[in-house]
Length: 342
Image 1 (cartoon, helix red, strand yellow):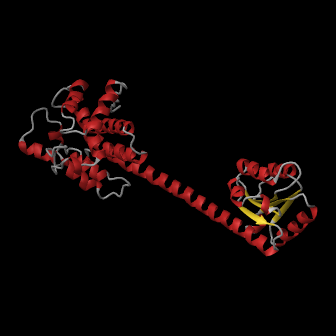
Image 2: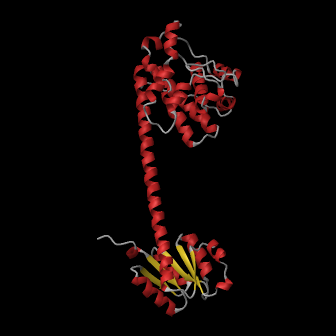
Image 3: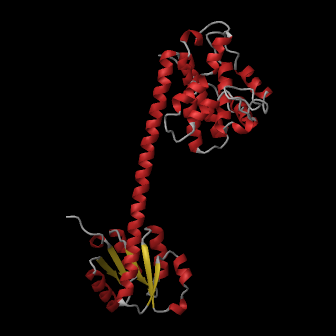
């Protein structure tokens, strides 16, 4: 049979007056609480070492360590709720006692009803805090599971692209890695960084709609073929918009070929209408694409790629993201991870 909260609540009374200790214990036990008593701070601390206490009731003026000093020690070491009692109210400031860590302050003499109401209020507040803490833990666990599921979805999508076109898949991974590094260096929030990384992992998923022979064509594309290529951000958006991500991944993918001056595609968006996450993603996309080998051409190398974004900084590409990208390669020795099918 489960015990009630009062039956598991342990209250420790600390007072150098034996008569008061006895009366308080009788009153507290009669309400169904567990009660221990101590005649001084030393004895109280000894009890606290041995067992958990829900609430401490302490007098202020006691031989040796005072109730105020005991309050500071207990609050710091155990975090226990404390109700301070005293008959010398003229000598103590309520605000100061609360500042020292007390939960409440009770003036002697007090009625049994008043004491019990104060105790019940503190215990009820503890119950509320515990419920809130449990709810927060459950929420964190749920978010962790949801986040894990999202990673699983994205990795599955990336793997689907990889089976069909290894060049595109490895490109996505490297773009995701570089986008992540730029975003972190820019000081974006952990949540934003995660969203950028996941978008990088699937930013070319729209290329699933493009015939494989066009993607791997070792020659210049025709106008019709290039128009199909230019539509892949929209196709990617249409695929991803059905998934309720905590990030605007579909929009990041839709915009990753847009440019600050409005010369990009497929929407022709300009600076203020392009998301910051997309500005980072587009720079990583350009640098990886230019630096790496493709079926239709050899790679230009990282120097040429960085030269491209440097030349068009502020015109096509976000200036801050460009500077940080160049800094990563030039000063922090960043390099692309080499992925393989093995």
